[in-house]
Length: 554
Image (cartoon, rainbow, N blue to C red; front, side, top):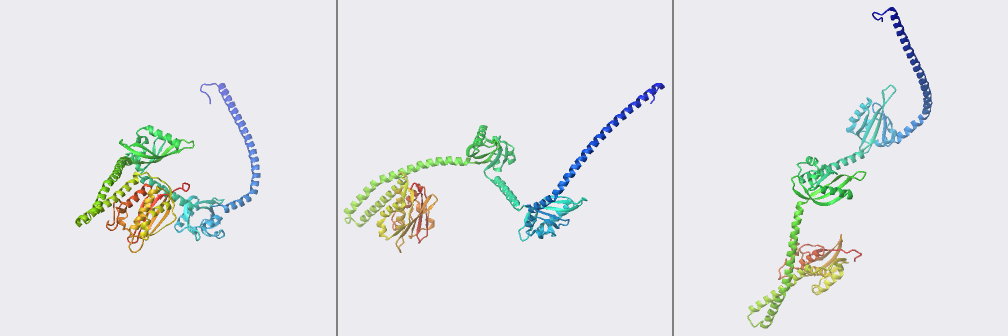
């Protein structure tokens, strides 16, 4: 373009250089195009070489294709899941052995059958929907339906279905994979029920259950935890730090240190704090959860409040001490009183008997009768004091617990009772009896008192028959003394073991009513118990237990 005011020479020179610049630009562009063409030729040469190599590889691949195809069919048939191929309508084209087993039918019978017929009635509609979606190219995964095998119970299967396409991109067939998940579903349901049961147990648990981090942040807790520590709700408790339930943070630090070493802590008693500052006594059971490096990361456990129990135990302890002192004083009083009463009573009876012998018949009959009353009452009093002393000696006298042969102790008791046994024409039998851990003198008294009772409370129409047996129950031997006597009504089963309690008048059966109370006290002092089974008019069986002895000790 001509510059305004320029001369002709100036214009010519300008256009010349402008043309030279364009020629230079075209030359550079041509050189670049030639270089690009050269590179393209080289690249095409490499591509040609690569195509040649790939054609050679393709030839090799084609050679192996049939082998892979056969291998595919082998794997297809041996697969643990059921594999099928169907057409658009669901008619089976191919199926493997697992599918045949799942349907309960021979594999050769599957082709041409429609797959829908193998699903349970309530699932056929869902199957048709799967089929509809798959035909439209929408693959389906992990669909759960119920299959009804031939002559078998229904099973639950997980289904994956995908479309196989033809060269024209149209859906050619459908491929199905069916996996039997019945057992897994049962396990899942069991787990779900278990989790629900666990949650219910935790929520309903009266103990305070909790999970918290090492630094005390509460991750989970139950309503009992919230109530125990005075939170308005579980949500409020879970927003707090468990440190607020301690009077001193050092207690929590000590607990963490112990957990790191011991892994779990059981029945730890301490005082904890409610939100209003109230002090409560608790029993803690806590375990630690650790990471792969062995570091404590979470603590969980349960806490039981036993403030009232602690108070009750303290009160019970004080009461027990008081009762122990009272019993000791009472036993001492009974023993001393009974012992001291014997001498004056013996004097009364002796001198009354002297009066009876010296003046009998020399004064009026009424005086003789009065003297006889005094003598009889004195003798009864002597027997009563003797029995009371025996009763008090049971606890005042030290026990000599040792392994003893029961048959030897029983023989001593029977020897002592021999006169009355003969007098009553009684028959006494016993089985092979064990070795027990007991005081021999007191055990002899137990046998003697129970057998004596059986002889005393006999029936008039037949002589006494008494059978003694023993049987092992855990670490105890249970002895059974059975008779054919009068029997006892059920309402008196406990009363007969109470001191001075009698079921019959003194005129009919002599005695003080202490015998069975002595037996009960001896048995219980030696670690056993005693009870009776009876039916009025058909006899009684007294049972009592005594600790067994290890074979090595016997």
